[in-house]
Length: 121
Image (cartoon, rainbow, N blue to C red; front, side, top):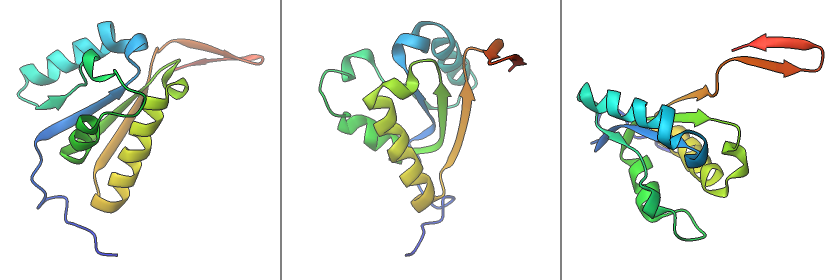
């Protein structure tokens, strides 16, 4: 299987944001999106109106393919969303075939209680 050189790929976006809307859209993701754009970083963030159907919108799949970097913002309900999981599958497939850069972060940050241990993220 031949792999494309990620440096030769023509990217329409620098960053694709994958996130669970109800968890982070109107706080962290909005702030991150605006900050990236202010710095001249072309960022794709889905619009709420894209989420009308049962299946992931073709526009999202295309945006993943056209993004140099995917940033996955993991949150409380991320894994409960079929849309988020479909995005994640596409991101990981594209990463493997095209060498796309993928980063993740977990929100919210703060104390997490797990059994008898307190962890700070």
